[in-house]
Length: 172
Image (cartoon, rainbow, N blue to C red; front, side, top):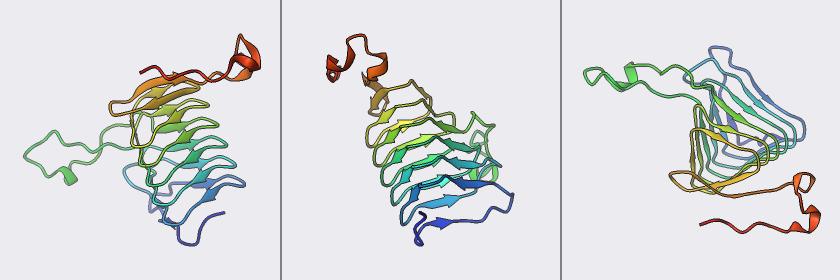
């Protein structure tokens, strides 16, 4: 379901925005084609909460069963700014670092920023207010700025102790 209050700007360059079956795009989510020709592909059963801004840039791929909390920004694009004699807005954009790739069963907390080159493997959790610009390994729980791994989730199917292993304590 896409809220009637979501804002999906049309692309003058033909960037594709596709939203999978049973996914929810809440009120005041903004999709903005800018900074590249990348497509945005959102899998099935995803939830994107209000206040999120999603730029198409160099492309975004979101797997299935992903939850993105309120007020997150996904920006798969970087401005050029090296020439101090030229206005930044006239310098264009840097080459792609691969866009943004989000696996399945990922939870992104409120107010996170994901930048070009961010890769979130399956099962990742990102704590509120974090900035992500690199690869986050499967089932890791990440927090902070700078971002760091605070614990590892262990799926029962991969646990050596079986279902009775219980949750791991965070490493501080």
